[in-house]
Length: 460
Image: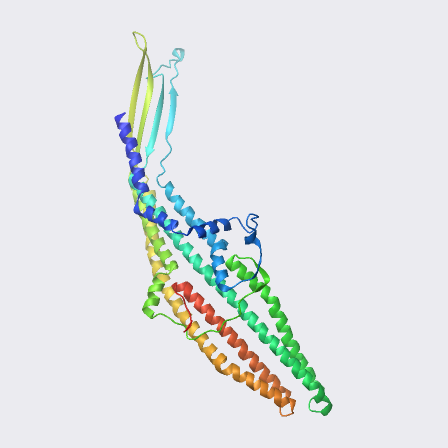
């Protein structure tokens, strides 16, 4: 019995030590740092949009600002909520590391039949209890492996959070750009209608022909068709914003008017950018996967180490000669024999190969992120160049040229082809200016998601 007590004490001691490894404590502590309002909102997001208990969540919003939808996106995004619950599940999984094999309780009773020459060998009946005990080293290795997996899920949550912000901001900027194109098209339709009205008296004086009028009407109709296409497309862009943020919006939701973009963007020096990339959650997630692969390798190596078995039993040995019965108590102790060497070797070799692959993936991810950083910096610089060229120079000049040509056409000093050419040039410059502004804002959002730094223009 003393041996049994020592064995049971060793089991609980191993479980206690295993559950208190620093990796497990750090994993649980990191999960507990999620702010309580955020955790509550992400838990509510798992209920879906049809939750009658939260009517404010299901009501479509008629107007919203960028800051507000970014805030709500981090609370209502189903993708972010899924990442949160994967992380929660991985942290909860750490608790199964100390799981022991199930014990076995047996009852046996001997059969005696003297006519068939079946005699009692030893006891007549008895009870046996057996408990396999996993090697404590295996438990510790398993818990470290599960804690490393929780670390992967923690970085995956941060990756998803940044991605939700980037996608939401990009979709919001697309709607702003579309609204700006709609406004330019409306101005162009009004201007074209004004030219048509001015052509009516010119027909009687011979300064314009009927063909010129028809051509101007065709140009106006094409612009009106483009305007109708933009209005139809807006609802689709709103659905993209809804999908990115998880916030239900009306198809005609009002967004903030595009604010002027201040140039150039304030960028940290290269050293700070490289440090920020090293802290990117995607790279940190690969580091966490590398740590997980190392923990899996350690856990696989523990398969070579035997486990333990303890047991205790009672047997009824039969009647004594003087009356009464004999009883016997036995204890058992043993170790497992890891004789499946081919299986253990295969697992160890596979874990070692996966660990090497995980380290190489870290290197590749770092190279990819650095290349992505340079590509984003180029896109930002090129968009700022286009914005400065068209917004400050070509755009105003093309509009001034269009106004002059339109005035000259009214007095017969210019042809209709001159008016149409100037009109198309002004429209193209306005659209390029709008697109370049949109690309600047998208590049800033992408750089913020990559580096975790706030990107803004000079003076913002």
